[in-house]
Image (cartoon, rainbow, N blue to C red; front, side, top):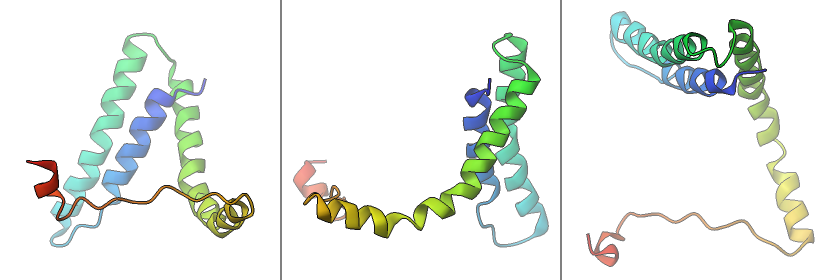
Length: 107
């Protein structure tokens, strides 16, 4: 309790369902439906295999909804993290772009 099996799939489903789609209404509804299929399948699997109860899945969904909305607050703390790391004389790992690196990777 809570079921993060369902919570993870719910978060993936929210991400897919909130993807921007241009075009007709039916395309948008199809994307929302596709985003909700994965959590529905996981819910059926965890309840059918008796790994979790439905209440566990509801609690997992609430945890992930809190994370979904709490992410914005945490992103506001990035300058504090940078300041703290500069005090410790540490740095974040550099982001590596793979564009133009295909020749170096011998692909």
